[in-house]
Image (cartoon, rainbow over all chains, first blue to last red; front, top):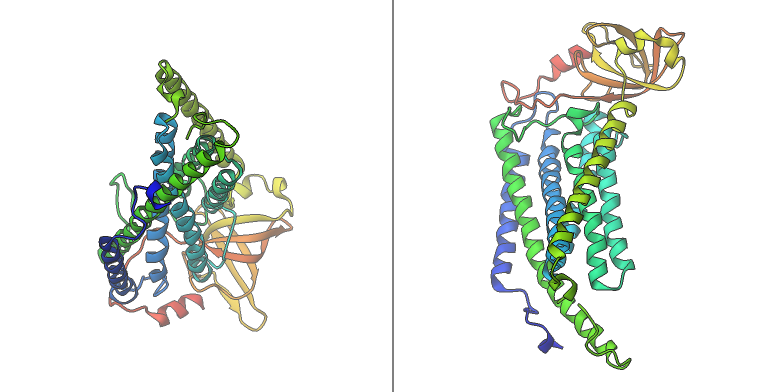
Length: 247
Length: 153
């Protein structure tokens, strides 16, 4: 079967080195957040949970956005590789947004005095996770690779449509969730410089984790796609439909 | 590859579908925004309640505002916390059953869940903190526990 694939079956050495680097940087990030950063004037040491929650949430947003980007590319030019990229990113989007909710609940209970409340920000995030689960359910239900890619791509784009509402929820609606401390339009940062450094460092580490799993999952996804194509082609032979299979 | 994509005229259809997709998503987004901003009001402010108390009656609502300075009394045997919640325009007394949360203090943002009794006192069974987006280190690097405790008495 290996002759059917032109991708490597084993993980290259540079990826192992990258993984080791991530573990080391993660330790540095944990040190910055847990030890080096000052406590917050209001929250005390509880502020340290924020470094994990916010960095993961940001990368989750990036993952959802990139999933929709690759999904749109797939709809546009129909290359199998774009679908493989979209799936890889969607898996990380589901992982990171689930971690955002778990971290958020952990952070929320001692600070806001509740694990969960149905305000706009939290509701939109729950909806995002539910739709990402839906993305994989849809993929499992459709057998034809082209149709599967197209239908799930639409789901991915719809999920990304909620991103601006989620990102600006605390500004646009009354929420319990605090507003952004770092406005991307450059209008201001309401966070002490040391805290900002610790947060940005942890965000970079979370981004590297996302990128590593993307590369690894795309490698697996390409093997998966080639095996599927080979299987479909094989199954098509006995029924006399040679040459009709489109993948 | 897919021969449908290789056919001529596909570019026009793709553009049409893309524009349709963007259009549908924009309309959906606008509708979501309208629905969320008008009907999904997470909490009401004291002055909004004051404008029409009859509208809320003794229904369960969320009331949001700041804890008025020097208004906090906590009975730790009966677990009764009373304070005034204000939005700078109107203030209402809140009776909360339970201990104050860790971040509860004067001038802190709060959202209380419960109902108005006889239109005057808000009886709360869930006290949530709505803290600001300002994160800063205390001046000497440590939290002044005594000052915190004092603010709660």
